[in-house]
Image 1 (cartoon, one colour):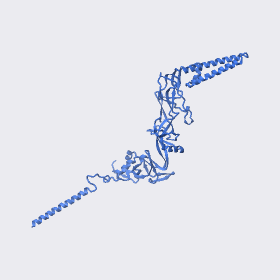
Image 2 (cartoon, helix red, strand yellow):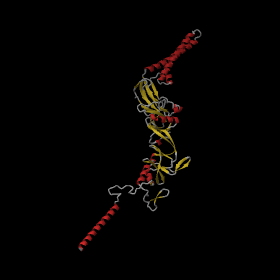
Image 3 (cartoon, helix red, strand yellow):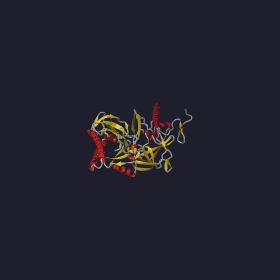
Image 4 (tube, rainbow, N blue to C red):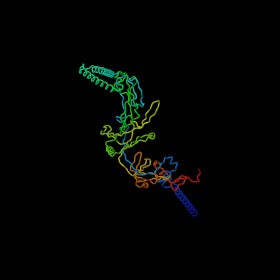
Length: 468
């Protein structure tokens, strides 16, 4: 009986020990692996200690790496616009000139090649004449001029002969002289229409008949604004040469194309529902902002990028369903001397694409920032204010946003003060890298970098006891 009691007590003790051990193991397992975090489940960023915050501390080197810049803002004027495509084109009647052969002949000399700069009156070609009509006109002019001289001599002799000569004879000779002068004037006009100068025509009338003809650059067209063509020092650029030396050409055949791109135009294309915007710009006198999409505009002088509309087309292209409008453009140039020749480089060239921003609405008393200064999270928009090394995320209201700029309302989200009739922000606002700063607020905490401390003004400093 005693043995049985002892065995029962031992069994009860073993069971109690096993139960206590199991309960202790369960407690230990719950402490290491809580219910919320199991070994087979990922650990969240917050669980790892990276608590999202509205502030982030950025060292000076990190700011340099991000290219961070910050400036205070002040309210101003902004124009909301719509963008339409455009292209630089030759200004009709101003930019290009064709040089044609005045008569049938053979090109015996070429004095310029494409790319050369030529002035009005410079020789372009020498044409060896093979035109019977031109040769005949020269002969007839010479004959008429000589006949006029002979008739005048007869009239003078009769007039000096005394009263024995009938007056009808003198009248007849004067009539003949008048007919010869009319004929000579007709031949002069024909030679002038062939491109002969008055001096050359006088030489032909004196008997120096032409077998070769020099073709020269024509005078420049009148410039906009009433400036005389002779005031333009650039002349023409030989853009395209269409003949070869020794080639026979016909009267009226195009020999070359000359261009002067100092006065160009910008042609915009808009849809029918945008016509009211353009009409309003013309009516209100609002200029159109031109984006030339240049890579290095600093290589050239500053140009006015706001140009008034000069012309709106009253027809619509049936293929594209768009209509055109024109803006005048004054070009800029550089002269380069190379191989004893002067080369001309234009800043703007026909065929170059541009963007035209047509004004739609005027916004007063707003903040204007670069597009990189704003970060969006759903319907919320944020910028970052700077306090030395501390950047704080501030929610703002966006009035307009495009690929280059954002416009913010001055509604008190950014602390401001009044100065000069405008509102200015107390803190500087980051102009770049807003997206990077926003990611830093989500993936890091407010913990300071090891070995650094921060002052009350927000500046980050290295601890004095840290080794350099």
